[in-house]
Amino acid sequence: MEAIRVRTDEAKVGMVVAADVYSANDQLILTKGTRLDERMISKLRFYNIYGLYVYNGDPDAEPSKEESYIEMVRSTPEFRKFNRRHVQSVNRLENSFQSMISGEGEVDLDSLMEETDRLLKEGRTGIHIFEMLHGIRDYDDMTYVHSLNVSLICSIFAKWLKMSKEETKILTQAGLLHDIGKMLVPKNIISKPSKLSPEEYEEMKMHTVKGYQVLKDMNLDIRVKYAALMHHERCDGSGYPNGFKANQIEEFSKIVAIADVYDAMTSNRSYRQAICPFDVVENFERDGFLKFDPAYLLVFLERIIESYLHNVVRLNDGREGEVVMINKLSLSRPVIRCGSTFIDLSKEPKLTIEAIV
Image (tube, rainbow, N blue to C red; front, side, top):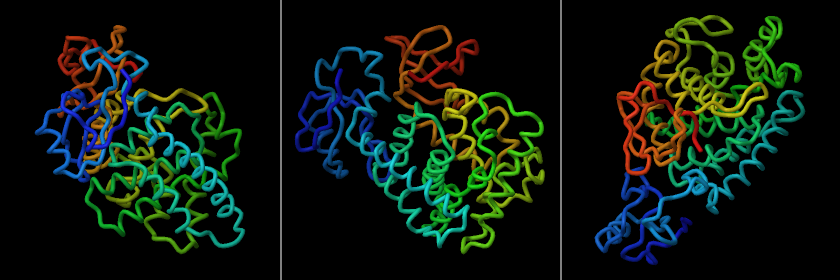
C-alpha cells in the first residue's frame, strides 16, 4: 500500500495510520496500523499534530516488501529534503576541514554548526532523524559523512541525557570534529579495502593524536579537543592512544565514542558492508558495558532501538516480518510479526535478525 501524508484537518474516520505518530516531546500518540475514529482525530488536534501518514488504498492488505517502513520513509518529501541537505552539508564540511588542516584563514565554527542545526530541524523528533539516517545507509561512507552523522547523533544523545543547551552545543561540536585527524592519515590507508598491516594500523591510530594537535590551539572548549584525542579510549583500558581506563577518560569523550562506533558499524566502509544494526546492538549488549560507560550506553541503546520499530527485517531462516515490540531485557532480540505469527526472538536463541530490508 502507498502511504501518503495528510493534514490533521483532512483526516477522516476509517483511515489507517501508516507510521507511528509522536507529539513534539516524543510521546507516542497513535501507533502504525490504527484505524482512525472521531476520538483519535480529536486527540491529534489536542496534541497539535499538524499532519500524519495514512495508507492510500486497501488498509487490510499486507504491505509488500517494496513498501517496507524504511522505503516509506525514503519516499517522503521530508526524507528527500533531508538527503539533499545532507549532501550539501557534507560538501561544506569537507571544505571547512581542509581549511582547518591547512591553517588557511579563520575557521567559522558557528557556520559549521549551522550545517548540523539545519539537518536537525528537518526531523520531527530525534527518532525521526535516526530513521532518515537509516535511509541513507546505502551510500558509501567518507570521513566527512561520518563526522556529520556523529554530530547529529551526539546532539540527539545530549537531549536524551537531558543536557543543557550549552552542553548540547559542545557535545555536537565534539562529534563534528572528533575524526578530523583522519585527514592527516594517508588516503591509501583510510580507503584500503583489506585488513591493515600492523604498521598501517599504528599509523591509523595516530589520527587521534593528530586530530588533537590540529585543534589544541583553536578557541574551542577543551572537551572538544579531548574528544578528538580520546574517542578510541575504552573504559577497560583496551583503547588507544594511551590505554586510559574509565576514570581517566573525559566524559564527553565517552559519549562521542558510543556515537562514533554506532555510526561506523552501521555505515558502509571500503573494507566491508554496513553491519545489521541489531548485530551492532547485540555487540554492545555483549561486550559494550565493559568498554563503554554503562550510564551512557544503556540510555543510548534503549532509545536507539526505538527507531527500528516497524522496520521489516529478514531472519536467518529466510522469513521476513515487522519489528512490533522491543524486549527491554534483550534489546537486540525484539518481537517480530511474520504474517499472523508473532516471534519473540528472546525466546528463540537459534533465530537472529539477518538484515533490515
